[in-house]
Length: 117
Length: 144
Figure 1 (cartoon, each protein chain N blue to C red):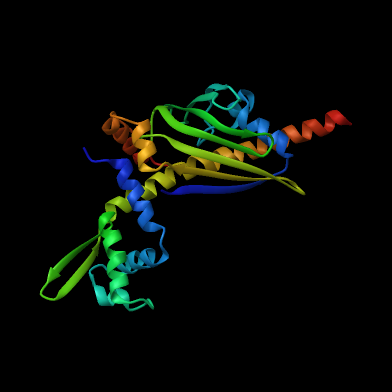
Figure 2 (figure 1 turned 180 degrees about the vertical axis):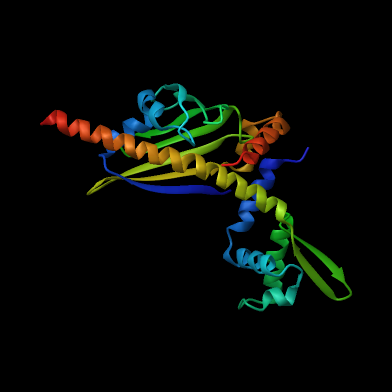
């Protein structure tokens, strides 16, 4: 059985880091990039980029394939989609709930004030 | 682990917002993702006490969520667990934290819903996972 919850947690942990998010954004624009291509926009060394790619691969966010001496990194959208769905779902739930809560509390406040008068 | 954070500025004093958040009477007025009705609202407002809310969406489907209060500091802070009992959308327990801060126009409410760490969610949820996932997918598949 695939552990959905654990997978999601790994996805989110991977997404916390801004460099990793930038790598994913790069892959979103142009899928299938080499490691050095991905390292280019950052002021960090290749091994550091490799480490970030390890985390992203563990979370299932990217795949790496080697052809000769070139490693090609590709985006795997599924875990990201799951994470985004979780967020979207609760955002929709809570955003409208809190809007109604705000209206309700405002009415209660108005009532409390008029009672005091 | 990730979390969803929302901030609202409300034209009401913190104690009024706190009661709206925690009393059954209050919950019945605002809980749910659309204008569908709250069918059942129960809230035992004390640490370790449970809340349970059943609501119907405008599409006719019914959902129920419940949890336990972990922290209650009136009128500043509420922390509670969250899980779906019916019409489920999440395979496991999560955590909701709300803080209220007095501001000139009333209250600034900061809301955070976070997933739990692996260990906690494994402990709190054993088995029944694939059914929950199917329900989750069904819920997301619905147009919002």
